[in-house]
Length: 471
Image (cartoon, one colour):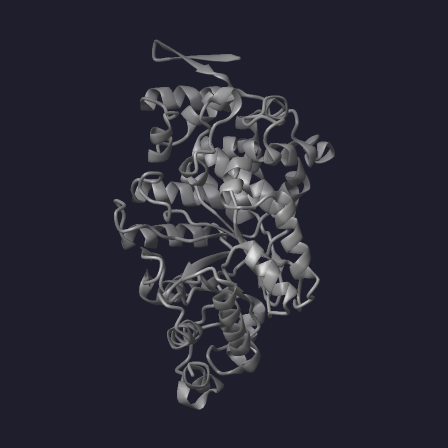
């Protein structure tokens, strides 16, 4: 179907839903690279006008990636809840935006949105985000609450959790232990202590798992650990009896892109079941840790949709959240600036994408986090990350990633420091995950208001960390 729109005396034509969605997307370099971006701001505005007037029903009748050839599309369509959708089925994309903003103004907004969540497809979520301003995304995100739990509860209102990321170029246990201590002393690590291993070998992964588990258990830290190896490696280690808390995997929004990651939905479900069978959680059984990122499908050449047309990267990103939603994860985060300036060119594009991803993930029912980050060849700096962190914290992001000094020396990119989150919590009155805060208070690191107190590590149980665990 060809969609037409007159704007300022110029007629614009859009070839189907895929084209409208792409052209309506705020400017980003990845869509320009794919050849699907609007050629001007005027064309982008015309596409957004068309998109706003489309009925939500169209997303159930006109898929952006063919049903027959893509298991993510089949998951989206086959799991769609018509009963939940009935309450909003009369709306257009623009009407959905207005309804969400109305919900954000009422105390029962979270419940009203939750009641229709199963009826919202990823494409509907992506579409409405494209016609929302940044403050719209923040307002609606802040109105929603989505929680998940394992040993800590993430996503609760008024909290900001963190992944403590103690990566080391050689997986040296002394370097890992030092980074863990650094993060714990600044109140980080309540979402997960998670390491990107320097290699994906089962032996190296197993060593790191035992290291993190011994730290956690010796000091009775209410958190979860994860070594971010491929899911097949982790499943094998579960079978061998390794202390696995969370199963990690990168996922994407098309079957082809997931194949490039070496996964299928069936394999992801297998990993989920394997970790749950261990019964290691205390406050919940959400055991998956999933990472996504705009541009992942394009980078693997798996971004073409209906009619062979390129699908915009943000829509494909949100489709990945359907895969995540199926697995009921503890943690999901978009690595928003990590893939590089080919996909998100500068700070402005990274900030916009981070707010979109967080909003869409939360709208679909995920405890959504963001790796607030950029690569050194992007047109961005730490001030951009400060801005995005503050906006996400105001929007109720479940967690962010923190590394020593905001500089990941193993992966070679810039993220957030432990101090960044400490300052944001203090500025906005946010707390760590409740179970983790209780632990911090119990060892004398925070006061009743959740503020860090003067603390002598030499008199704390943590004094053993860099000695006992570094050996």
